[in-house]
Image (tube, rainbow, N blue to C red; front, side, top):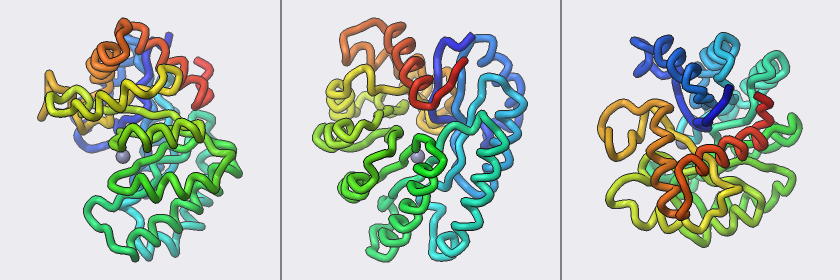
Length: 262
Ligand SMILES: [Zn+2]
């Protein structure tokens, strides 16, 4: 039975090669469900296989914005056909993502243009297939919010949120969910906790972004989906509720958004 949901994990990454099977086994015994997020071209097949083998793992199709360049953009229609084929043959693929905008390492106009052109194709694809979208956004919240204003039918989540209270408010107004990763537990993250306090419980999701962003108590080590419980404690303190309530509420939110009937 499902008791908690990590909505953003990369268990297909090589960091899990040595103990993936044992880890997944212990997660399913604990009732921790996982949405494994697609990041690059190669991850599609790995996720297709992972979700078929493991009852409590769901997946996505997509391409991280930093994987998008002029050549990827040319090949995108073919890539989307591949994604469509996977979605139509595997009912455990529940979203498009992660897709979005990331200007952190390259804020040139050319890169922004290419990433936005790719994102538009992904959003049209998500609308056609009636799937929610998992967004990655870094140093690009203004552009993301403007662009999403044109796609009113979409829903989804902004993962590892790093924007301001007013940017969160704009996204909530458009109906999106917001999720915070392990960095919300760090001592220096007062601002982020303030943003988290402004997000209503019915729009929150839990995520680890593992193997990255291990929470404070194990910062610097490999993260895994059990990290959601420490994040839940931080969110519980911010919202002045019990951690169990955060875990249960975010599970229900995730099941509804991703149509997981488990
Ligand atoms: Zn991301």
